[in-house]
Image (cartoon, rainbow, N blue to C red; front, side, top):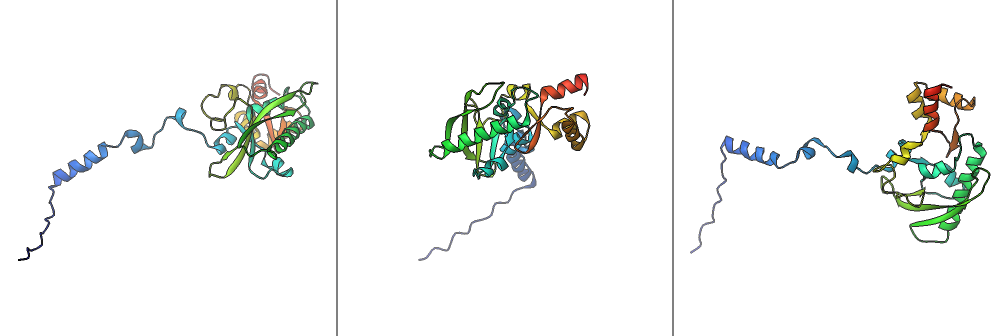
Length: 222
């Protein structure tokens, strides 16, 4: 004898029970998840964020001129070494940067490591010391390979985030940063730079101004 198939009965919920279940499900989510909140101190900055904030200076165009095809940036701290005093001639800054890029390329052409240290001799106040830098190739914001040149004690994963006391002490500001602070247009700030009313250096095709110069202008005027 074949038993008839068992019929599964669909359970019926009363309206109050349904509301209770939905409420319980909602309560399992944390407020941060519901509202999209995060601790800013725990959020790692993206590479573009670090470039926008001045913690990284993009020099991709210069890199490609000597055959470095990946996006390339130098940390603000490394860049500050290339500008040891406010009125350093622009050609000296450019020569320092070229020397660092050539030294990097020479070392990169001999290693398969994704991070290494290298030495470069640059002009500093009448001397030409040999300094140590670090380079790394790592994933960019969209997973593409990017290169960062920095000081040996820096980490590409934390540049622009975490401890930023040095970056803000005398960081290199963009024209837009200075224009916004002084309530001028970027074009007017570039005019001041050409007139040498604002000391600036060009790095990677863009003008950079020390924060200390901006503070001096705000306190003393042009």
